[in-house]
Amino acid sequence: MSRWELRQVPFRFQLSDLTLGSWALPLQVRPEKLGAPVRRAQAMQAPVHELLPGSQGFVERGVPLEEQALPFRTAGDYLCYVPQHYRHCFIDLGMGFAAYQAKFSSKTRATIVRKVRKFAEQTGGELRWQSYRTPDEIDAFLQLAVPLSRRTYQDRLLDAGLPSSASFRQQARNWAADDQARAYLLFDGERAVSYLFCPASDGVLSYSYQGYDPEYMKLSVGTVLQWLALEDLFNEGKFHYFDFTEGETEHKRLFATEQRLCANVFLVRRSLRNSLLLRAHFAMNLLSGWLGRVVERFGLKARLKRMLRFGRVAAV
Image (cartoon, rainbow, N blue to C red):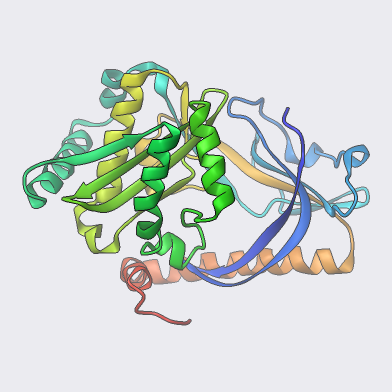
């Protein structure tokens, strides 16, 4: 199992796609590897002998679970917090592209192919996209993808855009030098309209950074690039899995070949401050979920998402 990494872990307070603020705790983090054995969250204990100076506890990401766990329980001097569960989606890249296509219904497969064809028709009849893998190619990718990322709702509203720092650029070059990165861009002429950046580890590619130009939303450019990238990865045959990482979306469920129940499990030192933070975070998640169900019930969810993505709503 990988070693713990001490980080400032942010707890974001969000309503729908709008971030209202965040509060960070210094926690030791490690991701659970894809294919790890299923565990019981209620039996997990903090590895106190591994606690580092300045750390307030531990968080294991993507822990596969037998069943849903309670959101809070005490574990000795620690508070075990499981904020939410999700279906961890991933793709088995060893099955071959023909078998992968066959997993879709004929209607869904035809819809995806039609979206690819429609994008080509709307952009001059030529489908232009590019893959990047060497250090110099990754540099070229970042020069085009970072400005594109700044226009996406992932960057503006979720603070989840492609990093522009020199340290990330060097890290991306290092991944590429080890042949452990794949990046993709979709173009309308010379204009980049959708991007995908995936670092790799132990044969697993991670769906880490993705986004698209909001002006091209109706052309489903994210879906188009995803399909093209997956065909390229299946044909290459180097990687074992494409990991959609934590979180659950319609896009991930559509493209995944497998799903499993997972959660991020926090084991945080018990204190009044930490308890208030975690319980406030959980309460905000409940409120956000309730609000999402309300707007969906009245047919407003899709409209609000479009407004947020195009910057027409400044506050809630």
